[in-house]
Length: 325
Ligand SMILES: NC(=O)c1ccc[n+]([C@@H]2O[C@H](COP(=O)([O-])OP(=O)(O)OC[C@H]3O[C@@H](n4cnc5c(N)ncnc54)[C@H](O)[C@@H]3O)[C@@H](O)[C@H]2O)c1
Image 1: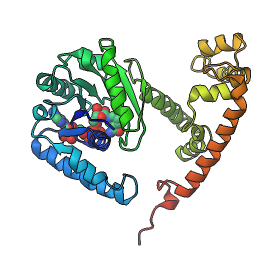
Image 2: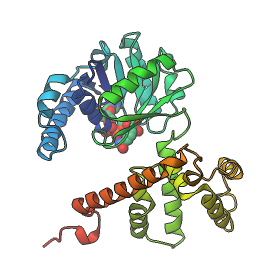
Image 3: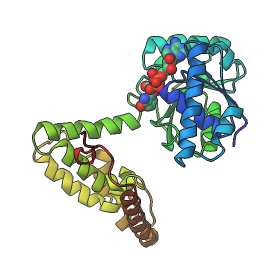
Image 4: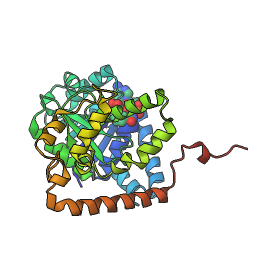
């Protein structure tokens, strides 16, 4: 739980979800938008959504009462931010709108307030140009849908004061979400990786190798199936970095540059660090814990399969669509 006072500026899709999450964690949250009328309308929408989420078992039973107690619409940006310890900007992804909003936030906020931006793609340092105290500003990037995705990228820019970061880390931790820190670089980490995968997937479709449906099936049921529990480095370590080096050599027969062997992989393999099987790789998993890791992995995959079978297929396939009469 947190007792911080928070303002979320831009109470649309992402800002609304972020406000719900922070208010449910105990923060006193004010939402602001272009006008009081829109903020009030969005507030009502957030309560309606919460009622549905409670009915669907997605929010705790007392979520609506907790939101009524902790969340409120503000008449203006200035009113919302005046008392806030933390302010999250979630206005549209246009630098002019963000700059104008950050100027207004800076002018009305307490000098010790920390300001975050939910930008997906704009460099934090370029947004910081409009912030009066840029040392108290950083990217705090929630993912869609904010109420349910548990990871948040934290993106300090080079001028961010280290001492402001724990406030945000603690606030996000109080929501039950997990943070990871990333340098201020185009696409940050989430979108850079997501678009790298999407880029390759579209190439495969355009080359006529597989359909979007078949690619989605492969991703969901093979390597994507591992991703809820392991990231690419744990996966590579478990597969064997020597194996990765051989696969790179094979990919290079067609794409020598696109799939050039990464320097870090070469160095590890040359040093005899092949990942889990040798007790050292990208992540240092001690060799004596390999059996425990394999057991966890197997348990996780069986549990995931069971969960997905219980959920049934996503309603995006033609076969699952309702038939019109
Ligand atoms: N939608 C996503 O999947 C997603 C995921 C992660 C991050 N983001 C980022 O979150 C931010 C918000 O995106 P969104 O999808 O919630 O957009 P949205 O259009 O749903 O919400 C934007 C809100 O900002 C308000 N607004 C517009 N101009 C304003 C102003 N001058 N002052 C105050 N409020 C203003 C709008 O009325 C609206 O309520 C963007 O930076 C976006 O890139 C979006």
